[in-house]
Image 1 (cartoon, rainbow, N blue to C red):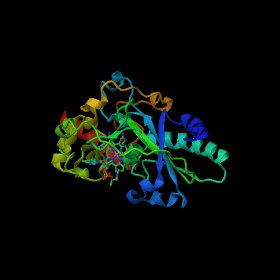
Image 2: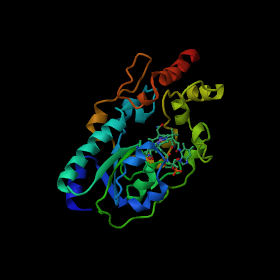
Image 3: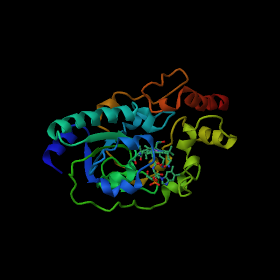
Image 4: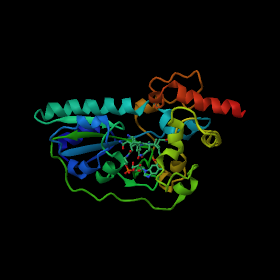
Length: 265
Ligand code: B12
């Protein structure tokens, strides 16, 4: 990667890589953000943002680790937008557009093509340093800045994630039954869905397929200040939802989930 791009990206994320836009062109997710992709897109600069904090923070936590920290959409967007501004100054004739999660880019696959890690059987990117406890964001650019591309590789295939999956969603390709998806679902939940949430002890998201993954033992903690300084591991009905990862579904959804634990006691 061009030295100037490396210098700029280092200010945004601890780990990043680049692949050809053509390698993901046929796999784009059909979403509204798709129209923001520059017409002349040539490369995707992909970055990972680790979010794992010290274990003691999670001791009494009632939400998934990814939701304990400040909403990653805003953290990643701010960091990548700053990088885009510097890149635009450096390469004024080129386009740079950043995305995070709400992205047409299949981020796990793209990050693997950028050599940032392997794709786990749990569908997540597993990085060598931070395991799967990373968020992914990317900059799509008209600048051709790719080098050698690696084929996207898999994990150890030990089967622990599929075996431990609380709803047995993994392996079934039934994304809707994934406990994380169930906690994010709007409206009424079936009795089975309610019991699933209660028995998990987790009112938002799910970490099971990540916590049993052997590739997640001995991983580095996050150095990202915005995450370290924003941890809220326990949520109740009075907790403000602004700036948290569950805000996008509205207060009713997290409140509904939290109420399940009250009736359980
Ligand atoms: C929609 C979505 C979900 C949906 C999944 C529905 C689906 N169709 O995949 C739900 C709500 C279940 C979900 C849950 C989670 N998600 Co999510 N999600 C996404 C999102 C926005 C799009 C994924 C997508 O539609 N890909 C397109 C399809 C067509 O790709 P695919 O190659 O066919 O399959 C992918 C997935 O479907 C998955 N997969 C394959 N088989 C199965 C089977 C099951 C049961 C599930 C759940 C997933 C799964 O693996 C592939 C790689 O992503 C991405 C962001 C992005 N733009 O990529 C984040 C993203 C993949 N999610 C992320 C995270 C953090 C999570 C959770 C860990 C959050 C949590 N703790 O609860 C869980 C993990 C569940 C899991 N094991 O996948 C991160 C992953 C980071 C990483 N290290 O890989 C991403 C990249 C967001 C980000 N910017 O960081 N997610």
